[in-house]
Image (cartoon, rainbow, N blue to C red; front, side, top):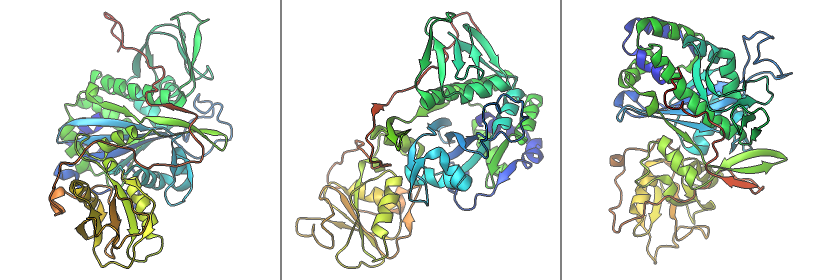
Length: 480
Protein backbone atom coordinates (compact mmCIF):
# COMPACT_ATOMS: atom_id res chain seq x y z
CA UNK A 1 0.00 0.00 0.00
CA UNK A 2 2.76 2.46 0.94
CA UNK A 3 4.75 1.86 -2.24
CA UNK A 4 1.78 1.66 -4.57
CA UNK A 5 0.86 5.13 -3.35
CA UNK A 6 4.38 6.46 -3.26
CA UNK A 7 5.52 5.38 -6.68
CA UNK A 8 2.29 6.53 -8.32
CA UNK A 9 3.06 10.06 -7.20
CA UNK A 10 5.71 10.57 -9.87
CA UNK A 11 3.77 9.06 -12.75
CA UNK A 12 0.98 11.30 -13.96
CA UNK A 13 -0.06 8.96 -16.74
CA UNK A 14 -1.37 6.50 -14.12
CA UNK A 15 -4.28 8.83 -13.41
CA UNK A 16 -6.48 7.11 -15.96
CA UNK A 17 -5.55 3.66 -14.70
CA UNK A 18 -6.10 4.53 -11.06
CA UNK A 19 -9.52 5.89 -11.93
CA UNK A 20 -10.46 2.31 -12.81
CA UNK A 21 -9.96 1.02 -9.27
CA UNK A 22 -12.85 -1.05 -7.97
CA UNK A 23 -14.75 1.02 -5.41
CA UNK A 24 -17.14 0.40 -2.56
CA UNK A 25 -19.84 2.87 -1.57
CA UNK A 26 -19.50 3.07 2.20
CA UNK A 27 -21.75 6.05 2.87
CA UNK A 28 -20.86 8.31 5.76
CA UNK A 29 -19.24 5.70 7.99
CA UNK A 30 -15.70 6.86 7.16
CA UNK A 31 -14.00 9.72 8.98
CA UNK A 32 -13.59 12.66 6.60
CA UNK A 33 -10.68 14.55 8.11
CA UNK A 34 -8.80 16.59 5.54
CA UNK A 35 -5.68 14.78 4.33
CA UNK A 36 -4.70 17.87 2.36
CA UNK A 37 -4.02 19.68 5.61
CA UNK A 38 -1.24 17.23 6.38
CA UNK A 39 -3.27 15.36 8.98
CA UNK A 40 -2.46 11.71 9.61
CA UNK A 41 -4.75 9.18 7.90
CA UNK A 42 -5.79 5.65 8.87
CA UNK A 43 -6.31 3.07 6.13
CA UNK A 44 -8.24 -0.05 7.13
CA UNK A 45 -6.60 -2.92 5.22
CA UNK A 46 -8.75 -6.04 5.07
CA UNK A 47 -7.83 -9.41 3.64
CA UNK A 48 -11.00 -11.46 3.15
CA UNK A 49 -11.17 -15.24 2.92
CA UNK A 50 -13.21 -15.08 -0.29
CA UNK A 51 -12.08 -17.56 -2.94
CA UNK A 52 -14.12 -15.86 -5.66
CA UNK A 53 -12.46 -16.26 -9.06
CA UNK A 54 -10.26 -19.22 -8.09
CA UNK A 55 -10.50 -22.59 -9.80
CA UNK A 56 -11.87 -25.47 -7.76
CA UNK A 57 -8.43 -27.12 -8.06
CA UNK A 58 -6.62 -24.11 -6.54
CA UNK A 59 -4.79 -25.01 -3.28
CA UNK A 60 -6.52 -22.13 -1.48
CA UNK A 61 -9.92 -23.69 -2.21
CA UNK A 62 -9.03 -27.16 -0.99
CA UNK A 63 -10.47 -28.18 2.38
CA UNK A 64 -12.90 -25.26 2.60
CA UNK A 65 -15.92 -27.51 2.26
CA UNK A 66 -19.17 -25.56 2.21
CA UNK A 67 -17.58 -22.25 3.28
CA UNK A 68 -19.18 -19.41 1.32
CA UNK A 69 -19.17 -15.63 1.39
CA UNK A 70 -16.32 -13.66 2.96
CA UNK A 71 -14.99 -13.00 6.43
CA UNK A 72 -12.26 -10.55 7.42
CA UNK A 73 -9.40 -13.04 7.60
CA UNK A 74 -6.84 -10.29 8.23
CA UNK A 75 -7.55 -6.83 9.71
CA UNK A 76 -4.84 -4.17 9.77
CA UNK A 77 -4.79 -0.41 10.23
CA UNK A 78 -2.10 1.51 8.33
CA UNK A 79 -1.36 4.90 9.94
CA UNK A 80 0.33 7.37 7.59
CA UNK A 81 1.57 10.65 9.03
CA UNK A 82 2.82 12.97 6.25
CA UNK A 83 4.12 15.50 8.75
CA UNK A 84 6.66 13.06 10.19
CA UNK A 85 6.92 10.84 7.09
CA UNK A 86 6.27 7.88 9.36
CA UNK A 87 4.05 4.85 8.88
CA UNK A 88 2.79 2.30 11.40
CA UNK A 89 0.84 -0.90 10.92
CA UNK A 90 -1.48 -2.29 13.62
CA UNK A 91 -2.93 -5.80 13.36
CA UNK A 92 -6.25 -6.61 15.04
CA UNK A 93 -6.57 -10.31 15.91
CA UNK A 94 -9.53 -11.88 14.13
CA UNK A 95 -10.62 -13.55 17.40
CA UNK A 96 -10.78 -10.28 19.36
CA UNK A 97 -13.99 -10.25 21.43
CA UNK A 98 -15.84 -6.97 20.85
CA UNK A 99 -19.31 -5.44 20.75
CA UNK A 100 -20.51 -5.55 17.15
CA UNK A 101 -21.72 -2.04 16.30
CA UNK A 102 -25.48 -1.56 16.22
CA UNK A 103 -26.29 -5.02 17.55
CA UNK A 104 -25.75 -4.79 21.30
CA UNK A 105 -24.17 -8.24 21.16
CA UNK A 106 -20.58 -9.41 21.46
CA UNK A 107 -18.70 -11.64 19.06
CA UNK A 108 -15.33 -12.06 17.39
CA UNK A 109 -14.39 -9.01 15.37
CA UNK A 110 -14.00 -10.96 12.12
CA UNK A 111 -17.76 -11.66 12.14
CA UNK A 112 -18.62 -7.95 11.77
CA UNK A 113 -18.15 -8.00 8.02
CA UNK A 114 -20.56 -10.95 7.79
CA UNK A 115 -23.17 -9.08 9.81
CA UNK A 116 -23.15 -5.86 7.81
CA UNK A 117 -20.29 -5.74 5.33
CA UNK A 118 -17.31 -3.38 5.49
CA UNK A 119 -19.48 -0.62 6.97
CA UNK A 120 -20.22 -2.72 10.04
CA UNK A 121 -16.55 -3.61 10.48
CA UNK A 122 -15.54 0.07 10.27
CA UNK A 123 -18.23 1.08 12.77
CA UNK A 124 -17.20 -1.72 15.13
CA UNK A 125 -13.54 -0.64 15.08
CA UNK A 126 -14.38 3.02 15.58
CA UNK A 127 -16.83 2.39 18.41
CA UNK A 128 -14.74 -0.18 20.30
CA UNK A 129 -11.31 1.40 19.92
CA UNK A 130 -11.96 5.05 19.08
CA UNK A 131 -9.64 4.85 16.04
CA UNK A 132 -10.96 6.98 13.16
CA UNK A 133 -10.93 5.16 9.80
CA UNK A 134 -10.36 7.45 6.82
CA UNK A 135 -10.11 4.93 3.98
CA UNK A 136 -10.84 1.28 3.28
CA UNK A 137 -8.76 -1.16 1.17
CA UNK A 138 -9.76 -4.79 0.61
CA UNK A 139 -8.05 -7.72 -1.10
CA UNK A 140 -9.23 -11.34 -1.45
CA UNK A 141 -7.31 -14.56 -2.18
CA UNK A 142 -7.10 -13.94 -5.93
CA UNK A 143 -6.06 -10.33 -5.47
CA UNK A 144 -3.33 -11.30 -3.01
CA UNK A 145 -1.94 -13.82 -5.49
CA UNK A 146 -1.93 -11.23 -8.29
CA UNK A 147 0.07 -8.79 -6.22
CA UNK A 148 2.63 -11.43 -5.18
CA UNK A 149 3.00 -12.50 -8.80
CA UNK A 150 3.50 -8.89 -9.90
CA UNK A 151 6.65 -8.56 -7.75
CA UNK A 152 7.99 -11.99 -8.71
CA UNK A 153 7.34 -13.67 -5.36
CA UNK A 154 8.60 -12.83 -1.87
CA UNK A 155 12.00 -14.17 -0.72
CA UNK A 156 12.15 -15.35 2.90
CA UNK A 157 15.03 -16.95 4.74
CA UNK A 158 13.96 -19.84 6.98
CA UNK A 159 16.56 -20.73 9.61
CA UNK A 160 14.71 -23.96 10.29
CA UNK A 161 11.92 -26.06 8.83
CA UNK A 162 8.40 -24.63 8.91
CA UNK A 163 5.09 -26.14 7.90
CA UNK A 164 1.44 -25.36 8.21
CA UNK A 165 -1.20 -27.66 9.62
CA UNK A 166 -2.36 -29.41 7.46
CA UNK A 167 1.07 -29.91 5.94
CA UNK A 168 -0.25 -29.40 2.42
CA UNK A 169 -0.55 -25.65 3.17
CA UNK A 170 3.17 -24.85 3.18
CA UNK A 171 6.05 -27.22 3.84
CA UNK A 172 9.61 -25.91 4.32
CA UNK A 173 11.72 -28.92 5.20
CA UNK A 174 15.23 -27.47 5.46
CA UNK A 175 16.92 -24.14 6.24
CA UNK A 176 17.57 -21.76 3.37
CA UNK A 177 16.20 -19.00 1.15
CA UNK A 178 12.82 -19.64 -0.43
CA UNK A 179 11.02 -17.36 -2.85
CA UNK A 180 7.34 -17.85 -2.07
CA UNK A 181 5.21 -17.69 -5.19
CA UNK A 182 1.49 -16.79 -5.19
CA UNK A 183 0.26 -20.15 -3.83
CA UNK A 184 2.91 -20.60 -1.12
CA UNK A 185 2.77 -16.93 -0.12
CA UNK A 186 -0.98 -17.11 0.44
CA UNK A 187 -0.65 -20.36 2.38
CA UNK A 188 2.11 -18.85 4.51
CA UNK A 189 0.17 -15.65 5.22
CA UNK A 190 -2.96 -17.58 6.18
CA UNK A 191 -1.36 -20.28 8.34
CA UNK A 192 -2.73 -20.05 11.89
CA UNK A 193 -1.61 -23.48 13.08
CA UNK A 194 2.00 -24.33 12.34
CA UNK A 195 5.01 -26.37 13.34
CA UNK A 196 8.73 -25.64 13.17
CA UNK A 197 11.86 -27.74 13.63
CA UNK A 198 13.51 -27.34 17.01
CA UNK A 199 16.69 -28.65 15.35
CA UNK A 200 17.12 -27.28 11.82
CA UNK A 201 16.89 -30.02 9.20
CA UNK A 202 15.85 -32.70 11.71
CA UNK A 203 12.47 -34.14 10.67
CA UNK A 204 12.13 -35.76 14.08
CA UNK A 205 12.20 -32.44 15.95
CA UNK A 206 8.96 -30.79 14.82
CA UNK A 207 7.40 -28.58 17.52
CA UNK A 208 3.92 -27.09 17.42
CA UNK A 209 3.73 -23.30 17.45
CA UNK A 210 0.80 -22.76 19.80
CA UNK A 211 0.30 -19.04 19.21
CA UNK A 212 -2.42 -19.43 16.53
CA UNK A 213 -3.61 -16.06 15.24
CA UNK A 214 -1.02 -14.09 17.25
CA UNK A 215 1.83 -15.95 15.61
CA UNK A 216 0.22 -15.48 12.22
CA UNK A 217 0.01 -11.72 12.83
CA UNK A 218 3.74 -11.57 13.54
CA UNK A 219 4.51 -13.50 10.35
CA UNK A 220 2.14 -11.38 8.27
CA UNK A 221 3.74 -8.14 9.44
CA UNK A 222 7.19 -9.52 8.69
CA UNK A 223 5.91 -10.69 5.28
CA UNK A 224 4.65 -7.19 4.41
CA UNK A 225 8.05 -5.64 5.12
CA UNK A 226 9.74 -8.27 2.96
CA UNK A 227 7.18 -7.77 0.17
CA UNK A 228 7.78 -4.01 0.21
CA UNK A 229 11.54 -4.54 0.12
CA UNK A 230 11.09 -6.96 -2.78
CA UNK A 231 9.03 -4.40 -4.69
CA UNK A 232 11.78 -1.82 -4.30
CA UNK A 233 14.47 -4.33 -5.26
CA UNK A 234 12.53 -5.23 -8.41
CA UNK A 235 12.50 -1.54 -9.33
CA UNK A 236 9.03 -0.35 -8.37
CA UNK A 237 10.21 3.22 -8.87
CA UNK A 238 10.89 2.32 -12.49
CA UNK A 239 7.83 3.22 -14.63
CA UNK A 240 7.81 -0.12 -16.49
CA UNK A 241 7.99 -2.18 -13.31
CA UNK A 242 5.41 -0.01 -11.61
CA UNK A 243 3.17 -0.36 -14.65
CA UNK A 244 3.00 -4.11 -14.10
CA UNK A 245 2.23 -3.73 -10.41
CA UNK A 246 -0.48 -1.13 -10.98
CA UNK A 247 -2.06 -3.31 -13.67
CA UNK A 248 -2.14 -6.19 -11.18
CA UNK A 249 -3.47 -3.94 -8.44
CA UNK A 250 -6.36 -2.64 -10.51
CA UNK A 251 -7.92 -6.07 -10.53
CA UNK A 252 -6.76 -7.09 -7.07
CA UNK A 253 -7.75 -4.25 -4.76
CA UNK A 254 -11.09 -2.69 -3.79
CA UNK A 255 -11.10 0.77 -2.18
CA UNK A 256 -13.67 3.16 -0.74
CA UNK A 257 -15.41 5.79 -2.84
CA UNK A 258 -13.57 8.66 -1.14
CA UNK A 259 -10.05 7.55 -2.03
CA UNK A 260 -9.50 9.91 -4.94
CA UNK A 261 -6.62 10.17 -7.38
CA UNK A 262 -5.71 13.42 -5.65
CA UNK A 263 -5.51 11.63 -2.28
CA UNK A 264 -3.27 8.94 -3.70
CA UNK A 265 -0.90 11.34 -5.44
CA UNK A 266 -0.75 13.69 -2.45
CA UNK A 267 0.11 10.94 0.02
CA UNK A 268 2.39 9.29 -2.50
CA UNK A 269 4.42 12.44 -3.04
CA UNK A 270 5.22 12.50 0.66
CA UNK A 271 6.12 8.79 0.95
CA UNK A 272 7.87 8.14 -2.35
CA UNK A 273 11.26 7.70 -0.62
CA UNK A 274 9.91 5.68 2.30
CA UNK A 275 12.18 2.84 3.49
CA UNK A 276 10.29 -0.45 4.12
CA UNK A 277 12.37 -1.01 7.26
CA UNK A 278 10.89 2.22 8.61
CA UNK A 279 7.43 0.67 8.73
CA UNK A 280 6.59 0.30 12.41
CA UNK A 281 4.63 -2.89 13.03
CA UNK A 282 2.51 -3.00 16.17
CA UNK A 283 0.62 -5.82 17.90
CA UNK A 284 -2.07 -5.43 20.54
CA UNK A 285 -1.42 -6.98 23.96
CA UNK A 286 -4.27 -9.36 24.68
CA UNK A 287 -5.69 -11.82 27.20
CA UNK A 288 -6.95 -15.28 26.30
CA UNK A 289 -10.46 -16.20 27.39
CA UNK A 290 -13.16 -18.75 26.69
CA UNK A 291 -16.72 -17.73 25.83
CA UNK A 292 -19.45 -20.34 25.33
CA UNK A 293 -16.84 -23.02 24.76
CA UNK A 294 -14.90 -21.11 22.10
CA UNK A 295 -11.53 -19.46 22.50
CA UNK A 296 -11.31 -15.70 22.05
CA UNK A 297 -9.13 -12.72 22.91
CA UNK A 298 -9.73 -9.47 24.74
CA UNK A 299 -7.58 -6.36 25.13
CA UNK A 300 -5.05 -6.42 27.94
CA UNK A 301 -5.40 -3.05 29.63
CA UNK A 302 -3.91 -0.55 30.22
CA UNK A 303 -1.16 -1.61 27.80
CA UNK A 304 -3.53 -1.98 24.86
CA UNK A 305 -4.85 1.55 25.25
CA UNK A 306 -1.34 2.97 24.86
CA UNK A 307 -1.11 1.20 21.50
CA UNK A 308 -4.54 2.38 20.39
CA UNK A 309 -3.70 5.97 21.30
CA UNK A 310 -0.89 5.94 18.74
CA UNK A 311 -3.40 5.25 15.97
CA UNK A 312 -5.71 7.96 17.25
CA UNK A 313 -2.93 10.47 16.69
CA UNK A 314 -2.29 10.95 20.39
CA UNK A 315 1.22 11.48 21.71
CA UNK A 316 1.84 8.80 24.39
CA UNK A 317 3.90 11.34 26.33
CA UNK A 318 0.98 13.72 26.79
CA UNK A 319 -2.43 13.37 28.34
CA UNK A 320 -4.69 10.87 26.55
CA UNK A 321 -8.25 9.57 27.04
CA UNK A 322 -6.98 6.52 28.91
CA UNK A 323 -5.84 8.87 31.68
CA UNK A 324 -9.29 10.37 32.16
CA UNK A 325 -12.15 8.87 34.18
CA UNK A 326 -15.66 10.17 33.45
CA UNK A 327 -19.04 9.67 35.11
CA UNK A 328 -21.89 10.48 32.73
CA UNK A 329 -25.25 11.81 33.93
CA UNK A 330 -28.34 12.31 31.80
CA UNK A 331 -29.21 15.98 31.96
CA UNK A 332 -31.75 16.09 29.14
CA UNK A 333 -34.17 13.35 30.06
CA UNK A 334 -33.61 11.71 26.66
CA UNK A 335 -34.08 7.95 26.79
CA UNK A 336 -30.93 5.96 27.73
CA UNK A 337 -28.68 8.93 26.96
CA UNK A 338 -26.20 8.48 29.83
CA UNK A 339 -25.71 4.81 28.90
CA UNK A 340 -25.18 5.63 25.22
CA UNK A 341 -22.71 8.41 26.00
CA UNK A 342 -20.81 6.14 28.40
CA UNK A 343 -20.46 3.48 25.70
CA UNK A 344 -19.28 6.07 23.17
CA UNK A 345 -16.68 7.47 25.57
CA UNK A 346 -15.38 3.95 26.23
CA UNK A 347 -14.93 3.55 22.49
CA UNK A 348 -12.88 6.77 22.44
CA UNK A 349 -10.63 5.34 25.18
CA UNK A 350 -11.94 7.07 28.32
CA UNK A 351 -12.42 5.29 31.61
CA UNK A 352 -16.05 5.46 32.71
CA UNK A 353 -18.14 4.84 35.78
CA UNK A 354 -21.78 3.69 35.95
CA UNK A 355 -24.16 6.01 34.04
CA UNK A 356 -26.81 7.90 36.02
CA UNK A 357 -29.38 10.69 35.97
CA UNK A 358 -28.84 14.32 36.94
CA UNK A 359 -31.08 15.89 39.53
CA UNK A 360 -32.93 18.20 37.19
CA UNK A 361 -32.62 18.98 33.48
CA UNK A 362 -29.76 21.17 32.23
CA UNK A 363 -29.79 23.70 29.41
CA UNK A 364 -28.16 23.57 25.97
CA UNK A 365 -24.56 23.31 27.22
CA UNK A 366 -23.19 20.00 28.39
CA UNK A 367 -21.68 20.61 31.80
CA UNK A 368 -18.24 19.28 32.73
CA UNK A 369 -17.64 19.31 36.47
CA UNK A 370 -14.06 18.88 37.63
CA UNK A 371 -11.97 19.35 40.75
CA UNK A 372 -8.77 21.37 41.16
CA UNK A 373 -5.97 19.63 39.27
CA UNK A 374 -8.31 18.14 36.65
CA UNK A 375 -8.37 21.11 34.28
CA UNK A 376 -6.39 19.37 31.51
CA UNK A 377 -8.60 16.28 31.73
CA UNK A 378 -11.74 18.41 31.54
CA UNK A 379 -10.50 20.19 28.43
CA UNK A 380 -9.56 16.91 26.76
CA UNK A 381 -13.05 15.53 27.41
CA UNK A 382 -14.59 18.69 25.92
CA UNK A 383 -12.54 18.23 22.73
CA UNK A 384 -14.21 14.85 22.16
CA UNK A 385 -17.77 16.14 22.57
CA UNK A 386 -19.95 17.24 19.68
CA UNK A 387 -21.71 19.72 21.94
CA UNK A 388 -21.43 23.20 23.33
CA UNK A 389 -19.75 22.90 26.72
CA UNK A 390 -19.61 24.75 30.03
CA UNK A 391 -17.07 24.05 32.78
CA UNK A 392 -17.65 24.18 36.52
CA UNK A 393 -15.06 23.80 39.24
CA UNK A 394 -16.39 21.29 41.74
CA UNK A 395 -15.69 22.21 45.37
CA UNK A 396 -16.80 20.66 48.62
CA UNK A 397 -19.95 22.79 48.69
CA UNK A 398 -20.98 22.02 45.12
CA UNK A 399 -19.83 18.44 44.75
CA UNK A 400 -23.26 17.01 45.32
CA UNK A 401 -25.22 19.55 43.32
CA UNK A 402 -26.99 18.38 40.19
CA UNK A 403 -25.46 14.92 40.37
CA UNK A 404 -26.70 11.49 41.24
CA UNK A 405 -25.14 9.14 43.76
CA UNK A 406 -23.40 7.23 40.94
CA UNK A 407 -20.84 9.99 40.43
CA UNK A 408 -17.35 9.28 41.79
CA UNK A 409 -15.36 11.97 43.56
CA UNK A 410 -12.22 10.90 41.65
CA UNK A 411 -13.86 11.24 38.24
CA UNK A 412 -14.85 14.14 36.05
CA UNK A 413 -18.63 14.41 35.77
CA UNK A 414 -20.29 15.03 32.41
CA UNK A 415 -23.92 16.17 32.50
CA UNK A 416 -25.39 16.12 29.01
CA UNK A 417 -27.07 19.20 27.60
CA UNK A 418 -29.61 19.48 24.80
CA UNK A 419 -26.88 20.49 22.30
CA UNK A 420 -25.13 17.12 22.75
CA UNK A 421 -24.95 15.16 19.46
CA UNK A 422 -22.28 12.55 20.06
CA UNK A 423 -18.66 11.65 20.79
CA UNK A 424 -16.11 12.53 18.11
CA UNK A 425 -13.69 9.96 16.72
CA UNK A 426 -11.08 12.67 16.24
CA UNK A 427 -10.87 15.37 18.94
CA UNK A 428 -11.28 19.07 18.16
CA UNK A 429 -8.16 21.20 18.07
CA UNK A 430 -7.11 22.30 21.56
CA UNK A 431 -7.51 25.94 20.53
CA UNK A 432 -11.18 25.31 19.70
CA UNK A 433 -12.01 24.50 23.32
CA UNK A 434 -11.52 27.43 25.69
CA UNK A 435 -11.46 25.92 29.10
CA UNK A 436 -10.29 26.27 32.68
CA UNK A 437 -6.75 27.30 33.47
CA UNK A 438 -4.64 24.63 35.12
CA UNK A 439 -4.25 25.31 38.83
CA UNK A 440 -2.01 22.38 39.68
CA UNK A 441 0.16 19.94 37.79
CA UNK A 442 -1.62 16.84 36.54
CA UNK A 443 -0.44 13.31 35.99
CA UNK A 444 -0.11 11.97 32.46
CA UNK A 445 0.30 8.34 33.40
CA UNK A 446 -1.95 5.97 31.44
CA UNK A 447 -4.29 3.75 33.41
CA UNK A 448 -6.81 1.07 32.54
CA UNK A 449 -9.76 1.80 30.29
CA UNK A 450 -13.10 0.05 30.19
CA UNK A 451 -13.32 -2.28 27.22
CA UNK A 452 -15.22 -5.34 25.97
CA UNK A 453 -16.67 -7.28 28.88
CA UNK A 454 -17.46 -10.93 29.39
CA UNK A 455 -18.61 -13.02 32.29
CA UNK A 456 -15.83 -15.52 31.65
CA UNK A 457 -12.45 -14.81 33.25
CA UNK A 458 -9.40 -15.09 31.00
CA UNK A 459 -7.72 -18.45 31.35
CA UNK A 460 -4.23 -17.07 30.66
CA UNK A 461 -2.67 -13.66 30.20
CA UNK A 462 0.03 -12.59 27.76
CA UNK A 463 1.26 -9.35 26.30
CA UNK A 464 4.20 -10.49 24.16
CA UNK A 465 3.09 -13.53 22.12
CA UNK A 466 4.78 -13.49 18.71
CA UNK A 467 5.17 -17.14 17.69
CA UNK A 468 7.55 -18.42 15.03
CA UNK A 469 8.89 -15.73 12.68
CA UNK A 470 11.67 -16.49 10.15
CA UNK A 471 15.08 -15.06 11.01
CA UNK A 472 17.13 -12.64 8.95
CA UNK A 473 19.74 -14.38 6.76
CA UNK A 474 23.11 -15.04 8.43
CA UNK A 475 26.15 -12.97 7.43
CA UNK A 476 27.17 -13.63 3.85
CA UNK A 477 23.74 -14.98 2.83
CA UNK A 478 21.70 -12.73 0.57
CA UNK A 479 18.03 -13.65 0.26
CA UNK A 480 16.17 -11.82 -2.52
